[in-house]
Image (cartoon, rainbow, N blue to C red; front, top):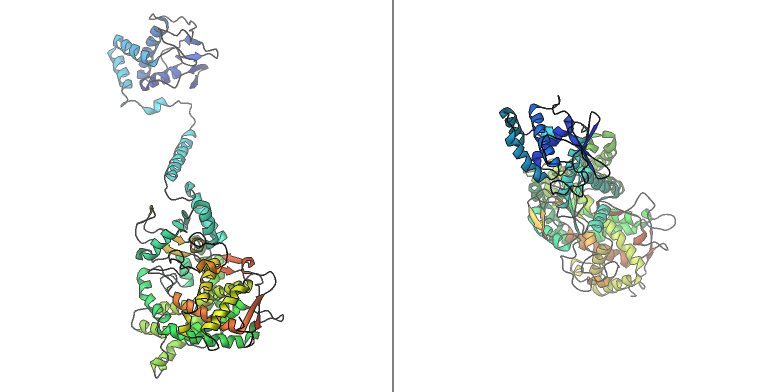
Length: 630
């Protein structure tokens, strides 16, 4: 360490005893010190022992230092010869080192300083020296050189803070990107907004493993694609809550309303029984005939969704069939299918755009206003339909004629169990669920059938064996095992809903990792289906379901207390749609078009990219002779 004072260079070696640091500071300040030559020789010279910038105690300590210096350096007191000292020979039998002052060995100095201190006759001077030697009374600022830049202290504090953050990150047990002073959460949230939720989850699981941690909206979020962890989360009741942006959920009407993204466990528990009653039991049995009739009506009007080239817009066809079936089962009010289908798509686009937006997004009106209109359009349409249903219920002569899902909710509202807003939201979610996800699922299935003619062949054989020429009935559904395996493999290979969002309501430990209360969780089910158990996970083949698959390895609808309420009716409806459609038409696609090269967006769910022209299909009628030739 070098110090410059009034043109005199003084070099002090940093390896010294703490009790000698005061003396070195005094030596550097007053000019009493030594300079190490580049040739490893040491020149000793003196300066006045009193300096105006030093305290009396520092000057007294300098006298002691000088006395010890002289005695150790030349073997006699009171003389300073300025003699060159050889580093090889050293002094007093101790070796000296290049860059070390003529003070020599620190241990020898301590002994000589104490002996010199005894020889000091001035009691006041001895008292001041002892005060400086006491570390409890020493002023730490006197150890800092006066020439240290003021800016160095903030830099040192910043470096120390960064090292502390780095050390904290290195001890984190769950893999994931670093926090890095808040930059990590901003980057991870930005990736979700940019790539979409599903695509970002796949990216992070590929990068950091099947159990990893990111941040969404500043909240710690786990992304899991490991079957054992998923099984643990799905089966426990303290993971029944979901997460999402509160302003976003409020905008689309799902905040503490409905069932899909209701994150209030108490309200969700009050609503779920109405859905379960409508989607199971008598409602499930009635659905078979209602759905089959709807398909027949829409296939008879196939020209409405067929262009001039003879290509059919199958996705729109499926959405109209699903909406019509849902309306007849759960609401029973005439509606404009085409208009409602368009509004449902606008609502869904707003839903997945707003679900994880940061709160600041909603402070800027021109950013989110474009999403308010499609949400308002659908909600207004559903509110009008529910209001018409209320009037119908009030004027009905026999309630049995109009008892359905919507009627049960209206009665619950009259009893004070549900709010008006919640009733309307529940009806909205019941009507949009099938057109939103199931229609896309069947759309992908028809492409897979067209792509794999041998699969179509075995399906048609089973339909002929089980059903024959009659209409499908509820008892036939369980017997269609090949068709069921095809549906399962389609949902595994090309899932639509491939992730589930949950929130931990209690502290827990999952596969050895500590999960704190309030942690967000995304279950990457689609990725798990391609990682574990299946013999050919990256191929579409019915061989993947030839043997029974343990349900912990295949969860297209989830399980446990917050599993999909419509999983049973969805399976039955898909079987009815495929049987009824395939018995009348043979499906083909344009050359080279398959499900793999359809442009898709993987956000809240996987959908075809409808901003570009969607691939159409060709439905060729089967005659009665060819229909069951397989």
